[in-house]
Amino acid sequence: MIRTAQLTKSFGERTLWQGVDLTLPSGRMLALVGPSGSGKTTLLNCLGLLEKPSSGDILHGEKSLTHLGAGGRRRFRKAHLGYLFQNYALMENATVRQNLDLARRDRERQAHALERVGLAGRGGEKVHRMSGGEQQRIALARLMVKQPSLVLADEPTGALDEGNGRMVIDTLRQMAHEGCTVVVATHKEDVRDGCDDAFDVHTQCLSVAV
Image 1: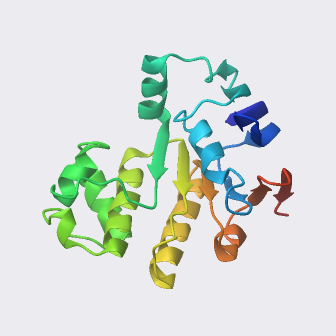
Image 2 (image 1 turned 120 degrees about the horizontal axis):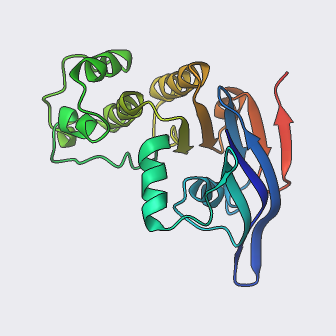
């Protein structure tokens, strides 16, 4: 379980959000929503230890993450975190299999993940020859191979058609059902509706699904 305590982020005199108290339990899917510029991606990056909050704390269980050194942050990300970003973050000149190897060299698990995202038998293909929707599915398969306890997704359906977007959200929801904590920054209502809860970063209002 991840939680934040009085988390605040400022840039100079501008405060994006302050006093954010969130509890992110296992098995739930949370949407971060709000207008452009409200700080959805910044909050996501703070949760992923890619940015530091201005004040407050992020805790994993009872352990503070905000005061970890560079090595501690890298170890936490390697052990617990998975990312799904709009730009896919793939090695485009490498094969699908080589990209999955970055998560874990487990051929059985890789084959299962590729089958689940509709790319069975395509592990030997070069990524740069594949479409944007296929590349997002590779990134999703990489998450499934790693099996992180916390997934952070930044506008994961932003560049996808309806069918691929629905597949991404359905897969993230399945990962949540299997015990993962999933946090999605989005401006799309259908993505928000696919999550258990929604946190409006601008108003700091948490809507909990019944």
